[in-house]
Structures are given as C-alpha cells and as structure tokens.
Image 1 (cartoon, rainbow, N blue to C red):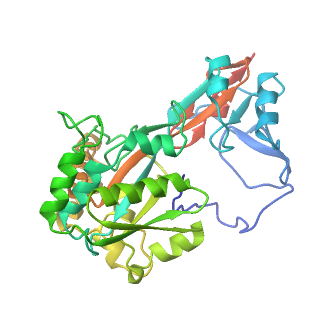
Image 2 (image 1 turned 180 degrees about the vertical axis):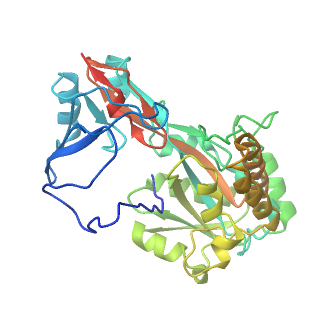
Length: 373
C-alpha cells in the first residue's frame, strides 16, 4: 500500500516528456539504454565510458546485458522464471501470492523490508484526538497482527511496528510502548484493558469518529475491524471509503476536518528527515494547511528543535545524528499522532541460474549486482 510524494532531478536540457527512441538520457552509471519499446521491453548494455571510482558509491555491474520485459499475468510471470526463460519477477510490484512458490523454491524467493510505514493518522486538532490519552488508547487497542491478516499479507510480506521509522533505517532503534505484556521494544499484542481505561480517562468516549480508508487498497474487512475497535473503546464509529485521488485531495486540506484515516509512506532515501520533516513537523502543517502531508496536523516545537539538531549533525557527526533521530522517533511515538501498523516487504522470485541476489530497501533489486550462470 505504498504512496509518497517524490521529487526527481535530471541533467540540464533533459526533455520533460517520455522518450521512446535514441538518443536516450545521459547517464554516469555502468549501464546505458540501447533499446526501448514502450510497454514492452527495455535493454541496458555496458556504458563504455564508465569507470568505477568507488565500489561503495557505484560498483561496476556483473551482467553484460540487462533486459526488462513486460509479461502479462502473474501465472505467466512466475512460469517464465521457474522455467528459466526469465530471471527475476517482482512479486510486490506485480501483486502475486507467493507462499506456494516459497514452499517449492525456498532458496529462490527473497523477501526484504522496504522503507515504508503503513499507519492510521489521528487528527490532533479534531476531537477526540486532541486528547493524548485518546490517541494512546487507539495505539494500545489496535491488533497489528490482525491487520496483517486482514491485508492478506503472507509470511515475510510485512512486519508489525509501533513506531514511525521503519526497520532498516540508519536511525532505527526498535521501540514499542503500546503492547500487552512487559517491555517497550517488541509488540506482543493489543492491551484492550489499558486502552479502555485511557479512553475513559480522556473523557472523550461517546464522541462520533469517522475513519477513512482507500477504496481498492484497504479490504472492506479492514474498515469493518477499525470501526469495531473504536466502538469497543466507547466511541460512535463509522466508516468512509473513497477512491485514492478523492481520499488524498480531502485529507490534505485541513478544512475538511478528517479525524482519522489509513495511509502509508515510502521514503525516497534512507534518511529520517524524509518521514518527520514533510509529515510530522510544525512547518509541514503551518506552511499551507489547505495542502499538507501532515495529515495528523501535528506540531510540537520540541520535536522540531530536536529534528533541526539532528539535521545539522548529519554532515559532521552521523552517529550523533542517528541517535538524535532515534530520540525524535520515540518522542513522536509517545505523543501518538499516528498509529503505526506495519512495514511492507518486497518479494522477488529468481531463476535457478541467478547468483549474488541483492536487494536494497530504498532502491529495490540491485539487478546489476546479480549474475547468471
């Protein structure tokens, strides 16, 4: 369930439209485009001008030729890889059930968490979620494992989480204050007794709450469960489902006063600022409340000050920056403007001749680092 606001840059003079024939865009990597047929194939060959200057920054590739082909239908894609007519299919990009594949080809199905977090935003400027205890009550009440099942994730396709930053981030330090049982690092299950107590202490029970979900992305059973959970806490809950474009256009405008909704974010690159600055900072809301990605309308000057300190430290003291971002993550989790639910995984299926499989949580499969026998 991935969405994000992304920006991309290109060399000066690059066209602002799609290109289907040579000359293609200039590049500095180990490969260049030699052939492209829209909606069919793209072929990369070695760039004769590339010289590896840093293995860490940009290693040379192994294959002489990399060819991407569009194949319609999940069964045909899997069959092509199983038979060795193709070498890699992305089961996440092309949603396909894979438990049977993993059972038949245990060494050829690879899952790896992405830099994404699926979450419920709680509008901190709309009752009942102006109250911290009400927000914490929802965090304690939600059954994250049940949400995984309702989203129909298989083993390895996602992992539960209680915090903003996804696992795998440089600044990630596992933290889960909202769980049954002891400890604050691992989620064990919902704590409905504590959740009900907090909701009652907040004085907000019996308030009407409408939860928004996205049509075609969240299964109807997800919305039904969220309504039931809110009812169990003592709220008068209802569900609103909308197409993605309408959901986004409504949620980003604070004048619409959405109380609560299910959303997700994928980071452009592995830096904590890609989560906190556009989604959970005072500036991200105050700059233009009618067009904001800060759907929780959350603003805490203490968090902003700590985030600014972390940003400043990144260039001169990365270790200190990571520690500061981890503090930001914990502070925001404690304030509960979100109910973090899960981190998605990417799953790839490879042929028997592929070696050195590598996957990046930020940049998908490192096809240039694989080889074929």
